[in-house]
Image 1 (cartoon, one colour):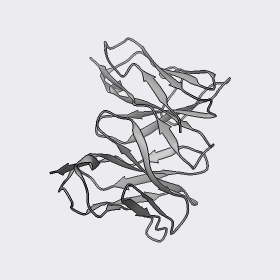
Image 2 (tube, each protein chain N blue to C red; image 1 turned 135 degrees about the vertical axis):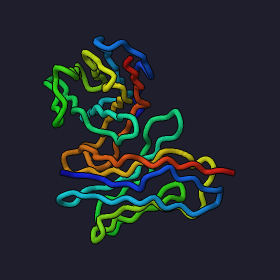
Image 3 (spheres, helix red, strand yellow; image 1 turned 135 degrees about the horizontal axis):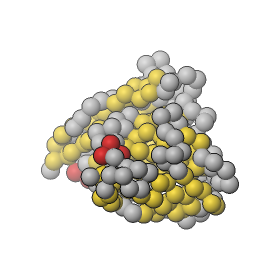
Image 4 (spheres, chains in turn cyan, purple; image 1 turned 45 degrees about the horizontal axis):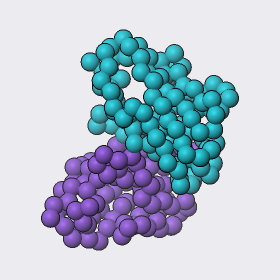
Length: 115
Length: 111
């Protein structure tokens, strides 16, 4: 299994500002992902965080809005830039230890409210 | 594209009642299917999974069978407990490792 720590657990931010969310894993992992859960909606994949290269973004998500870093195999950050109230969501970090189709582990999430 | 449709909640049951949460999916190929659970204040945890047709996943008294003919993966438990109160997510994954989730179903079990 894996223990995933996300920081902060929650925040209230002013529109127009940016917030960086950190994800720390207690072991080296190949695959790291960032998801968003908007109020009343399902989880949606934002991007795959690739170690040593640019993240791979899903349709509807762009690097300028959600820059991601992955400096090593245990750590990643997601920044929500130039925030608006529509960005109010829970953001979750996820890792897959065995390379897919087995089990994904999730952090507790960061609950973001933009006012 | 891939999609997962879950029974809408909330679902409220009395302790020891029978639980079914319906889940159907749309995907090409042969996805793996999962049920995740999110207890209050905690992160998502894998509850059970099935990786091929007719497989049955089971854990903590919960079961779900991968039905390719009906593209379904319904979650069942014969006797729920108060501690089962949580949000349940059905999800699928294909070989690209990415999970596609349903909207989640809030279950409340009353004593």
